[in-house]
Length: 228
Image (tube, rainbow, N blue to C red):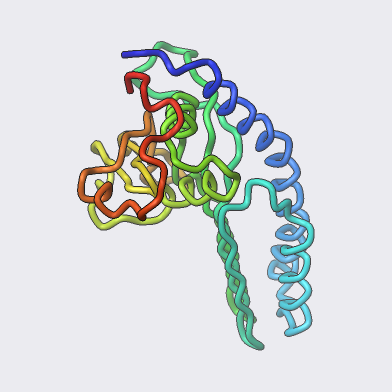
């Protein structure tokens, strides 16, 4: 397999470094919101409409936008629901690797908060991991490398897909102008096994997708002459 040109590896490392700094801040900011709410439920203090609105404002203003892939907040007098997809840094280690072996990667997680007068639910769960190799290939072969384009492609990997293996197996996920390729494995979360998508590389789009390229678009992405 040909090596990824250094330029694109550097771009992938820079993106991970930027996420690394904000990931810690995001975790702290979310904890500051969640801990008091959880305490209220332990004390059987039902949240109010004003509480829902305050939590929504605080989430939007204090959780860092760097690393945010998507955010949905809805609140009514009876219920507050927040769903956010975030990208951060992680170290990936698989059972098949030598003991202690791991690699730098990017993690995409789903954060869910649902509260009502009689209900409290919070989840912060990894749903996908992207190797630096896969991200570097994305920078090399993608049509657009803006922050918005990269975030959109990471979000595509995090979204559910009907043809995705439920627990284990290989997959490809079509994004804006290419596709992630990897496999699904399982991780343990609160005593149960949940699927984790691990992207190992980035591939050109299938021929059916290529035929939909808009007129006037560039005919080849940056670095297209390199062997994938």
